[in-house]
Image (cartoon, rainbow, N blue to C red):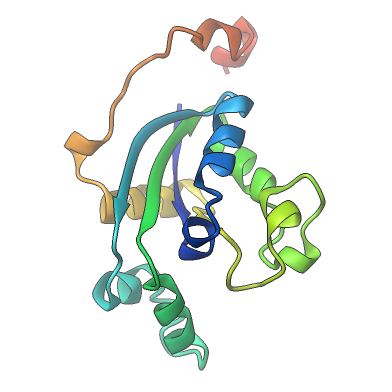
Length: 155
């Protein structure tokens, strides 16, 4: 089963939307197999956003990600990367569809509540960046048989 990293950014934490986002994740049937609160620093942000370090907006991005602690999640499910990214909505909240996390709660391209891995490769790298192996739990919730049809599981 696929895993992905999701970060509930300071814009989510400061607006007290943690429970709302986690409820949406759980209501969808996505399994949370790792979760922790942490304060990001410039070192980890330079690594995480290495593709943006030379952009003129990077200092503002970096500062905004250190305003408060964040909540880091490892999610698990079939096609969970695409499922969560569609739940999150377009990067800029003003362009995100109603019903998505950003469409319902964001008006910004930067203060857009959540970060979500965009591919299996980046998910693996990002999970390793934010979690040690002993912080991720590989378990099957008791409700698992209600999440997927048998033919979903054999693909």
